[in-house]
Length: 255
Image 1 (cartoon, one colour):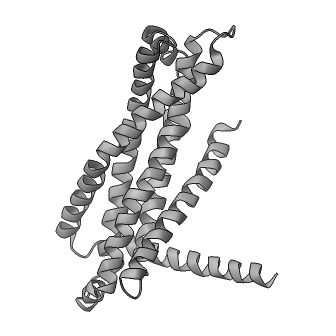
Image 2 (cartoon, helix red, strand yellow; image 1 turned 45 degrees about the vertical axis):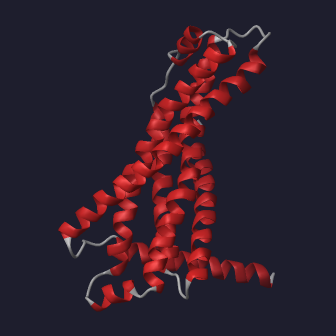
Image 3 (cartoon, helix red, strand yellow; image 1 turned 90 degrees about the vertical axis):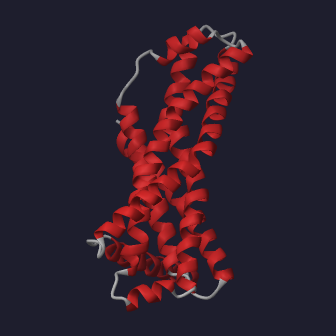
C-alpha cells in the first residue's frame, strides 16, 4: 500500500512538472525571427534524417503483411481481392501510424532529450535565463511544433509505401497477382480511416516531442544523466504512444 501511494505521488509530481513545462513552452517567442529559423531547421532535420528508415520499415511492413494475411486466405472460399483491402486497412489504421511513431520515439525522442540535456548540463540554458529569455520556450517549442509537421508527414508517406510494399510482395511471391491486390486496395475505401491515422500521428508527435523535451530540460548532472534522460524519454514516449493508440481507437472506431 505504501509503495502504491509513493508511486502515485511520484506520478503526480512528474505530471505537474510536465504541465508547468508545457505552459512555459507555449508562450509567444521572445525572438520571432530566430524562432522561425529554428523551426524550419528542426522540421528539415526531423523529416530528412528519418526519411530512409521510414522508407525501409514501411516497405517491409506491407510486404510481410501480405504474406501473413495471404497465407491464411489461400485455399479458403474468400475472394483473394479481400487481401488488398485487409492489408490496406491494417497499414492505414495501425501499422503506419503506430510503428512509425515508435520508431520516431527512438530516433527523434532520444535526439531531443540528449540535445536539450546537453545544453542543460553545460549551462547553456542557464545562460539563456540570464539573458532574459524564456529558455523552455526557446529550446522546446520549435522541436514540438516541428514534430507536429514532420511526423504526420512521415506517417502519410508510410501509408503509401506500406501498400506499395504489399504490391512488391505480391509480385515476387505470386501469392496473388498485383492486379488482384490493387483491386482489393480500391475496394470499399473509407476516408475516415486516414483521418483516424493522422489523429494518432499528431497525438504521437506531440507526446514524443514534449516528453523528450521535458526530460532533457530537467536533466541535472553530467553525461551519465543525459543518457538516463534519453532512456526515460524513449521509454515513456513509447508507453504514452501505445496508451493513446488504444484510447483513440476506442473513441474513434468503436461504434
